[in-house]
Length: 613
Ligand SMILES: Cc1cc2nc3c(=O)[nH]c(=O)nc-3n(C[C@H](O)[C@H](O)[C@H](O)COP(=O)(O)OP(=O)(O)OC[C@H]3O[C@@H](n4cnc5c(N)ncnc54)[C@H](O)[C@@H]3O)c2cc1C
Ligand code: SF4
Ligand code: SF4
Ligand code: SF4
Image (tube, rainbow, N blue to C red):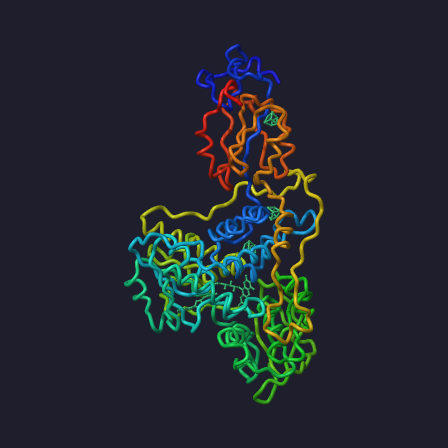
């Protein structure tokens, strides 16, 4: 492509890399390969969709790459930047990362959660964690609530050097990780070990300590430099049916909490043979499956949703639930609990959501003939709400949860809130990983406030690579997802043993090897090997340590086309509409090692031809 006639302003007539040479002898001298190149390759790491979908933005591509290379400890250390307890999320997370994984469009999504669990379990086995507390900075922060949001906030604050105290009203720490998620998903000893890790970081945990009873709102503000309220949604919703107060009626969250806080064999929960669970979400599914483990022989879920696909739950959990023998009755609302003092049956009417599923009032057809459904117990699992009598009204929103600004801050105070208590109704699904991410970001903003620095907005990724056409798929043979082993349905429904089992080391490597490394250099060396000129130099076989000597690049695109991951891209040399411009030559500005090492690479001098070995 000729640049003849193109006006080059004086200030551009200098030999920077990235400027098309003037079509003069000087330009030819400066750029030995001439001036016909129209594009130049640039390493620009993109945001993989998995990292973007994870509520705490774990560097998934990064740790999968390390697992592939057998660098498990490095992979564990990388995860721990964003996630305090991969052994927990590796078991309980609803894995939005897998729903977003590009491999799902090709054959099957990467089993990210299972690899995370493999790393989390490796971390649990270490005598000492890889994470250390920061140098003490003399400031004290109190975190109210020891669920995922409080746990994550306390963890990040301790790493920043704060003296952190967690106040927890329950007898044991863990929030819904303990008193919600059942043992057969998350064994107590795994959570205990992660709580111990917090104590090893120097965090003080005071259980049986309730704000509003043992500690006042004023105490929180007076005795600490800052406070994070991570108090969750701890009171169960009612279905407002007649007779709901009869004996034998349980609510989902207290039902699971009683079991989680006691030992399952000594729990006070006793169920008869026929149990109905009202609700179609994840909590209802946990209750239904737990009911079998607490002695029920027939368990039926009653949902307003008309079909299984409309149920607001994780499909594979629903599959496992049905496999264990739970029956489903759809399109029904319980309008009364019948019985003489104790529940004997439910009165059911046809019902549907009047608008969007789960976000609108329920329309009940009371003209239709009611069904009488005989049961011994009923468990109502239709959501939770906040319990904040102790909080001044000015900090509450219309949903009865905490009103915080986009940084999680309550007005201009040094009090912040994180987790379910602020995410309710925000459009963010209420789940462990979102609470962890919120706790992390809020901790960083507490740090900013205490240092008198501007608060951070939540980062929005600028280039999430979701189009497979931006990568070179010929490098990726189809390969089925490695399945996690599971207990058989008949044996598992009577025990608290973990249902889903761990990957072996070989399985973890096989699964990590399936990762495309979307948009991110993984040091495969392809560009380095295919370039027909001596243009691509490598300081080490590691992401971020490749560099293009643009003086010698012909712009043939071979490196770009042959990059499997799509991290190399061509940027045009000239903008013919507006004249000659200096092109974007910097490495990625956001995520990935190229982004982080851009500065270092920019400072490396381009070596002139005669010194190239
Ligand atoms: C039954 C159930 C099962 C779930 N299963 C999953 C799952 O498998 N995967 C998933 O990703 N998500 C799951 N979720 C959702 C997930 O558990 C929540 O989104 C997450 O726990 C929210 O974390 P949090 O820290 O905001 O609140 P919580 O976990 O609710 O923790 C809040 C803590 O604050 C304490 N607290 C409250 N008030 C006070 C006070 N006044 N003083 C002192 N302490 C106080 C509470 O006792 C509690 O320990 C489940 C939810 C439920 C209800
Ligand atoms: S925490 Fe959840 S969303 Fe994040 S990587 Fe792990 S499984 Fe995926
Ligand atoms: S293939 Fe790998 S990098 Fe790409 S979305 Fe899936 S897990 Fe992430
Ligand atoms: S393969 Fe070499 S010459 Fe071709 S565009 Fe890439 S760096 Fe330039």
